[in-house]
Image (cartoon, rainbow, N blue to C red; front, side, top):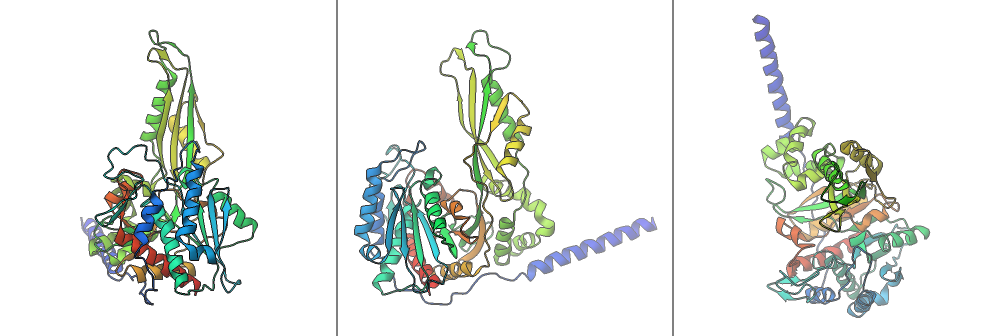
Length: 485
């Protein structure tokens, strides 16, 4: 009994020491936030919401089948030239693949690596006006908000960039560093004819940007538990994406005498097994970095967990998996998005097909995901094929690079009190096409993201507050000014 008592006492001492170390680490976490250094640059954004509304009225829609209304895209090009005359007088503009645009704002010092700022012209369809308070392409301004398809994704970023450049040129700003604006026309369907073509063009010219900025992060409110201040979530990494195709062939025939196993049944079981056998969860470096930045600013209990991932990681993982968004941050996800089989109610389909959309964590590969799916399905009759066209996860970017400092400084100057945090975005952006040009790729637009606004981007009643939009103009002006000094 004496030895048992000694063992319990030793265990208690170890536990106390363990808790003490964790509490000390939590209490002494150093803030990673930056202080605002300079004043805001002069920007005239008084008419910016009106011009965003004008841009929304031009129906630059891209569809899954690749069809676009060329007339609308070319009309948008013409509108840009008329709305921003100073930009079009000072910058060189060229068209890529007919519908995408590349602007070059030549700097005074050609030895400095350029900056590359991205946005995309296209928007997702709005097939009808049903459910919309205002028609999706009316471009209405009401209640201090700009309404319409593209108000959030992504004409807000594109037009704000042009507003910032026009205003800076009007105030005589001259950049030491060359700046590029790249506006792809097909981001919503993969960016292969737009962003990838622009990246190919820049690569052939030997352009190696100091950094790339695209959409993908936002100013979040109420999305980080325990943190009341707005969080400027800058995505330093994004997931890869692949559409894996499942196909099954079997005996067709009349439904009155069905076989014991049909192609449709085997496909259904395959999809069910995929859902029942997800890929393993883990905390990647970008997600750990999120906790590193958030922890010092959080209440003590959250700081205790977030600041001691060396021991709390299993609990943090379990907690994150309680929500769909948290789960997507911790694992490669695969979900069936298209199911096809049969054309008549009394005919057994001889073939069945599914498309499984997979979003890959950094460190995972398309080949590894396809292998996991085959093992999870466990049926040789189900053919699993990963197409040649896919996107492996690009490498995470360094949030402590000099380029990141310009970005952090611009956010601190434009949005005082916001907490900076590097994050992983689960969506795919045009920026992945530029990964071969630079390691410094960041994804952020200073637009408020709440649980509600996240549903609006591709949904009904998409809109942005005029105040948010004017702040976006100011942010881009700050960034151009800080990077161009």
